[in-house]
Image 1 (cartoon, helix red, strand yellow):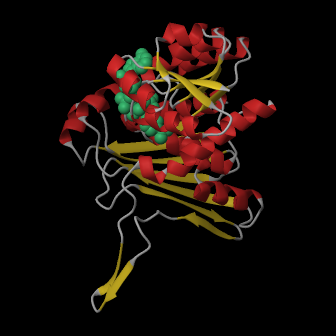
Image 2: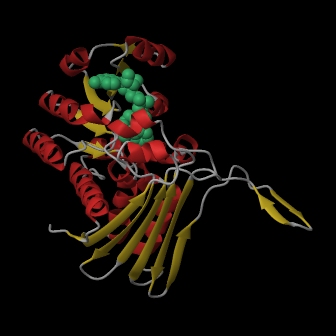
Amino acid sequence: MKVAVIGAGRIGQIHAKNVAEMAGLQLVAVHDAIDTSANALAEKLNAKAVSLEAILSDKAIEVVMICSPTDSHADIIELAAKASKKIFCEKPIDLSSNRVKACLKTVEKHNTPLMIGFNRRFDPNFAEVKRRLQAGFIGKTELVTILSRDPSPPPVDYVKRSGGLFRDMMIHDLDMARFMVGEEFVELFATGSSLVDPKIGEAGDVDTAAVTLKTKSGIIVQISNSRRASYGYDQRIEIHGSKGLLKAENILKSSVIEANSNGILQEPVQDFFLERYEVAYKNELKAFFHAIKTNAAITPSGFDGLKAQELADAATESANTGKVIKLSH
Ligand SMILES: NC(=O)c1ccc[n+]([C@@H]2O[C@H](COP(=O)([O-])OP(=O)(O)OC[C@H]3O[C@@H](n4cnc5c(N)ncnc54)[C@H](O)[C@@H]3O)[C@@H](O)[C@H]2O)c1
């Protein structure tokens, strides 16, 4: 199967390498708005640097992977759907739910297979929590706690274009909340502060945030986000059920423990997403290409992308107004 990658930045480089190394797939083309970026990646992986038009008009290219900045996703999804491509698109589809809805109409019209890159669903630890949850090991889910903290804040220029912490960062956790609970939420309260970098506050965003969500059946989810964790990339989940607890802890840089009379010292947690989710990125591609080959339903779907976006919009509104938001479906 011939594949093209659009956007040769941080995430595009990961997906391109994984495609190039996966049996049965051939990375044939790379496109980037900056020619030198496309050339460098294409050269490294034995592909060609080409224009977007060349990818869309090449009938031999079956799959496109959209890894360009968020504000280009919806337009490229629509162009690729019209060109009968199968699509993997990085999260989020767009920063506006209305734009996402319009884009998904085009996807539906052309019957386009589309996966959204909520990679954390494919992390082996979180996937195992979900498997045990579904197998009923802890009975009925009652409380879910998701902790997600970046090692350090992004540049303020990035923050200004990001759509805000809830749409840029928490969207992953909001998708994880839906994934774990398996029900839609009816109520949401969010709050945020700028405690890490005053420039983020001056840019109108927050860098520290918490959200509480509730489903119709009463399951409560709490999400805790920060743009800074001095000990590394903090990624944990805990699920409390009627018969017990499921937990996925952080992954440390090594398993070495140093003990002395002062106490016990462990390694810091892994640095950031590139290493923490290295396996998850491979697993998500395997799931995507397996679904395409077997004609199976693709998840996370465009609908999942929309639902996470709506929750991120509601969280932004709640944090701005101080109000509890009622959600309808
Ligand atoms: N799932 C994840 O874990 C994850 C991690 C990082 C980023 N992302 C998402 O991936 C997307 C890209 O993020 P990144 O961190 O790789 O950004 P990046 O800035 O590192 O890379 C983006 C690349 O796209 C190129 N580009 C810009 N406009 C383009 C266009 N119209 N067409 C083609 N190429 C274009 C840029 O030149 C750059 O090389 C974002 O939507 C982001 O939210 C997801």
